[in-house]
Image (tube, rainbow, N blue to C red; front, top):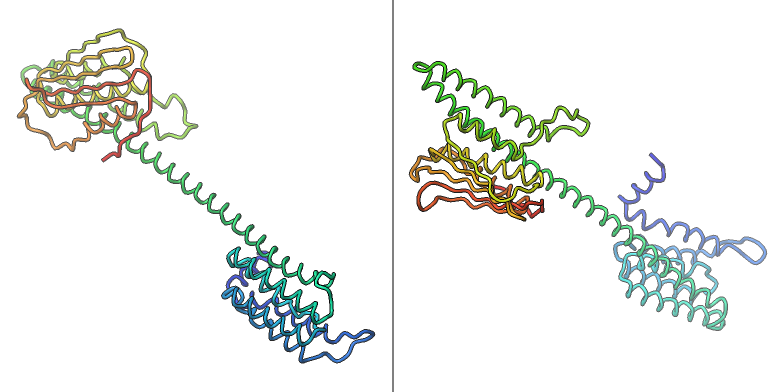
Length: 397
């Protein structure tokens, strides 16, 4: 690790040592300045050197009490200038304190103290040295006090700017993480919805076909064999759809041929044939003028029909189901109606199927209504836009 970085880290953990560092060179300069004569070195003026060192002592706590330290050091410096005009380092501790106040204090306070100190230092120097207030030596003291405050404010501004930049970066990173988490959650809900639709539908079909095969096994083995073949085809279709759904989790560099296509309305006949083979008569009608649909709309319509047929067979004990696809200029209306008994016993479902229908429709900008009919049975109506339009997804349960 860099020695300078280690040194900075150590100073950051020791505030008093860091605050006292400027006092060391100031004390050395004060001793040396009192030992310099016009033509040679002489014995230092220890009283002046000691006074200067004492005026630097408050700097040890300058970061803790910047305003108090500035006032004390300035008072000591002005006193030393008044009683020992020849002291070179008289206002030095006060200048350090002014810088610290400008860095740590409020802007208005820093400039008020800085300007007052500049005027006081200039006035005392001019009075004790018989100088003009606008003379070069007097103005040098004025400029030094103003410069200490200005440099401190510049450092403060730079630190504030860096802090704001770091805050903006942290906020951007946090928002990026939240957005990534939100997308992951939405994708997880969508995949869970797909898995529910696929598994619930095909397992219901397999269960119905297995019941038919069991019923026909003794008296009609040929028909039972056909029912078993239907179970084989249904399970294969379930595996294909599961593979397509889970394939969404694949990496981008996976082979394209390993991904099965998602279902579309063109596959609706195969879906209906499977339900018929399971013992549920399904009638399909298409009205209006068919128009090209967005892939998301087609998948949503297919999944809604799939879930509605599954519910009719599994929960309503329906004897027939009607599926109507009504193509409008801007909307596709999907209606699934069964004749299930209102008092039919319900399975141990959690209602996720109906929730999934509504969520799918909302994602593409559509709506779904579902409920029992007055004349009996159950009806699902979905209005889906022909062209895909996103809408805010609801919070999934």
